[in-house]
Image (cartoon, rainbow, N blue to C red; front, side):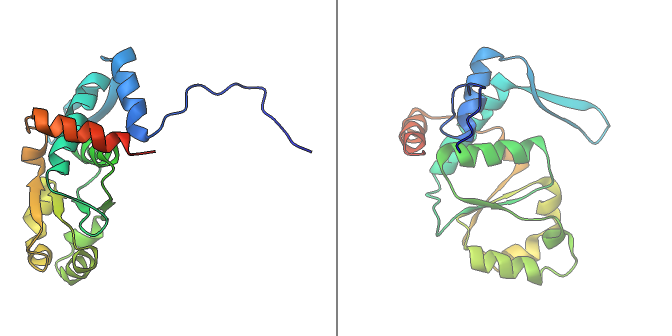
Length: 173
């Protein structure tokens, strides 16, 4: 016997970022994500602002020529920046690996070095804390480009990058 739901499902999204882009159009100012800063103050980001950041970041990630052989590696605590970089990679169809905190917070960075050697990243995204503690492990992966949270959200988009991003995003599915 086949059981069927009586609830009609809404629009099915082709990829995760489609839902973000739709929410940015329908509810641009609604809260998407928030975090406390070091002073305990809340930092809020609405759907429109998040979608714009994801688009900018995705365009720049494409410029690095990342693929399954040269993925993006994310070394970051859970944060707004981490979420935006992850969504940008998903939007651009770029393989990525978010590594757990214990790999780069240890005083002995041999484990991080081994993981990076196996992943052969084309780009490593670091938050501030990872940037301060991961140098030894990253030295074993010296041919990867590095982007920090300080620069990631301040990237300007380019028309060429936007065109390439649209084409790459259309291939996802």
